[in-house]
Amino acid sequence: MKDRIKKVLLPMFVLLFVIQIWSGIAHVVDSFPTPTATYIAAFGGLDEDGYEVQGVLEDPFYIENQDDKGLFWQVLESLKRVFKGFALAIIVGVPIGLLIGMSKNAQYAFDPFIQIFKPVSPLAWLPLLLFIFQDIDMTAMSTIFITSIWPIIINTSLGVKSVNQDYMNVAKVLQFSPLEKVTKIILPVAVPFIFTGMRLSLGIAWLVIVAAEMLTGGIGIGFWIWDEYNNLNYHNIIIGIIIVGLVGYMLDLIMGKIADFFDYRKKGRA
Amino acid sequence: METVEKKFLSLKDIEKRFKIPSKDDYIAVTDVNLEIKENEIISIIGHSGCGKSTLLNMISGLDSQTSGDILLENTHILGPGPERAVVFQNHSLLPWLTVYQNIEMAVKKVMPELSKNELKERVEKFVSMVNLDHAKDKLPDEISGGMKQRVGIARALSIKPKVLLMDEPFGALDSLTRANLQEHLMRIQQKVKNTVIIITHDVDEAVLLSDRVIMMTNGPEATIGEILEVNLEHPRDRVALQNDPEYIRCREAILSFLYSKYAKEDE
Image (cartoon, rainbow over all chains, first blue to last red; front, side, top):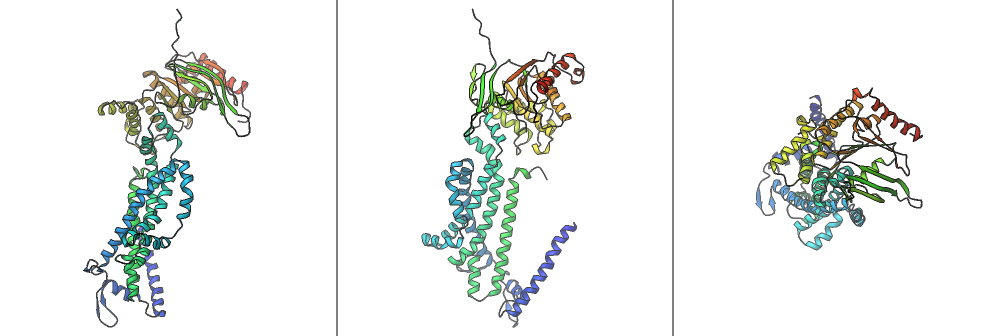
């Protein structure tokens, strides 16, 4: 109980400290939004000159026209792209990971490419993919796919390799077919690893989307932030950053819960 | 007319070599000849490195001999199979399945012809046989080491094997739990006669459980040194046996084999 209070109270102190520093920066840097101005930009109120301001979070669901929508729609659009790319990364990555985990030859064949392409930044892929697809959605989706597939492949193969030889001996004595070995022994062991990979991968996907949308334009939280920069609405950039952070945090929490659900090591231990 | 003797499990001129690069082969086991009768309980005892586990793995089919033949009811053993069930030293239960499910998985695979009810009946019968009814819905991590090994035994017996192979089945357990499991095994054996081969390094366990004790010489080139007949009636009582002249004779024979004739210096 005491820990719980600390967990709420201590971050509050840090927040107060951060707001102090922020005010200091706003004081020194010309036209940098103050915490108060940012708050008003988010939730509405009267600005310095006494004008009524409509906060961007007051009505996140508004739709003015195709290109002018509330923040909720911007985030939703980004999430849609993230899930498309993420889903494709799972569909392709898990079987490749299983193959690499089960076959030494497959590991030798794929490993150099994984090592080379894993560290490539999404920003390096973007121009190439934009050139190929000439389409915002396809470009964003394929960039997410190609940068978030690696943790899924690596963790899936790691999961397969962690299968205890004793379990395989049980399978041999019972004369399991190769398919039964996969479904009854390998997958149950590998699933928690696969979900760890998916969690890392979703984190990367959410990182990538902001950068991708800034370059591709259209609708989405990444482009919204870039647009606000062009409109000199610097306070909205700060709001955008906080929203991106909160959504990313929520994605990670949800993914963690799903991972726990499928992890036999965490069952029956309420 | 010549009567052809019905042989159950035969090991003929078994040899196991391991290839070592740029050296002569390592001969782990050589010249092993053994006939095992149906419903006989055999212990194989020897110091570590005598190839007793290698021998068991060749019978189970998880490993293969370099030369020689292993025949079960006149059929060559070419690989693992459910008619030679194995109880592994570290139980090898699947940790994501409950006690019930671990046994069910084996029965389902080996006896696909069973109806839903027959399957349930059979699994429950073997859960009961090792007195684990109260723990049948527990995961392996939630029960003790001795209980896990009991599930391992139940799983092995549930698939109706012709031979039950036990690789130091109680080796990882404390001595009280070990005694308890030996009692379980003897009680089960009284009810359902099985052919059992037990690998052990425990002299008392070997005498208490088996009809014959196979004593292995030290490796490399380990082979059968002596075979001891244990002429004691089943069921056996470990307390009463302590003063039984036959028990004492068997014990002494094994001890003198292991610690006088084939003592191992570096142990």
